[in-house]
Image 1 (tube, rainbow, N blue to C red):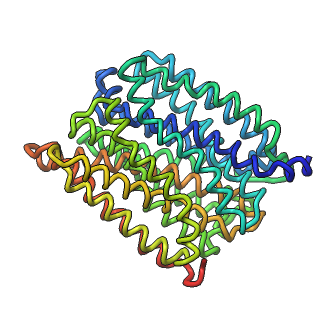
Image 2: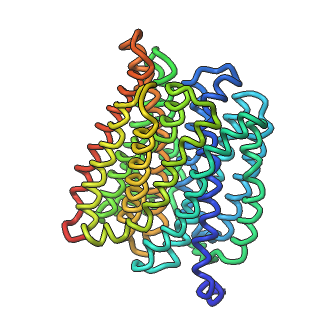
Image 3: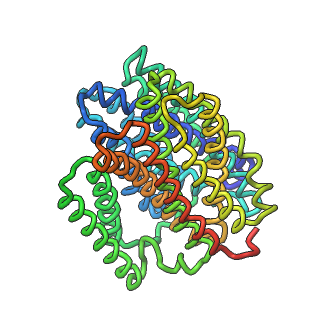
Length: 455
């Protein structure tokens, strides 16, 4: 079996990329039609955004299990199970009749997505050497970027001319193909003796869900007692988890991971930087439809420059990192990312489309390089023993911060509506983009803590 895997190991990133493609196509298509779903279900936008957030919360809840499940049952079995759950969840989303049914189905879909992406990434990390890792991770993410390229157009077209439910049924054939090839090529390495702290997982999962859901509630109500209570409860639970982890023989995420400088800086840098990057897929379609007055189809087409730039940046990432080193690259690139968000403060309903396209090209290019560099530096120094746990924690942080980014953007939009009730729609978006840029800039200082000579 190992000989087969060695012979066809270059196909593993391609198989893993199927999951990235499915989730990217699904999420970008759904992000594009949030205003449409708000009207369809006669629900406030602040509530309808939970179609995004509930999926990401489910992701963050189940991602921590992937490391232990892969060691007990192998990446092959868990990856196939994840694809199956995601596909079933997609079907349930497609047949939903109410917003609550859709939200519940998105949670099921999110469980599959939670297991899918980190297992695919872990299979690649386990298979390829450090020298091959950037290439392999690029191979995983590059085909997955086709999803953002066509997702907004597909979502807009389907919402305008077909039924929105078709967006979810598209996942079914990809899920079947992914399961078939994963059964052939994914690694089967297991360690049945591995142990973990089950109650620690429960505490950690509840803490993450509580804090993310509290952020979502802040944008839906002006009665802040409940979200504050839930947020404080989540913080207390997270504190209890880390205290427990220091004294448990088999913690879910060992505190010793943070003794690895590149890992600790990468985790905290990812956490802060992705508040902004997580908000972009929510903010841009919303701005184009609510401010610029585009239809879902036109919005999908207008999002093309962002996706094209995401793909175009990939070949430049590795040479740029080798030239500048991770510390300099991430510090500079993160400031540029912050500036790209702040540039949307110049946009109103009269702004030239040429300028908006330029802004999206810049944002997509810088974002793409940021993702690859942040993810690679976080796992690059992990030993084989620590890779499953470290990779899962990275994936958890990615989903939590992305969900938080959507919530924070919604909070900022709602807050400015309260502070400046008579301001224009353009002003509300400009206010939100400005503060997203400021928030992202803080992560540049975190990445400056990387080792100077890390290339």
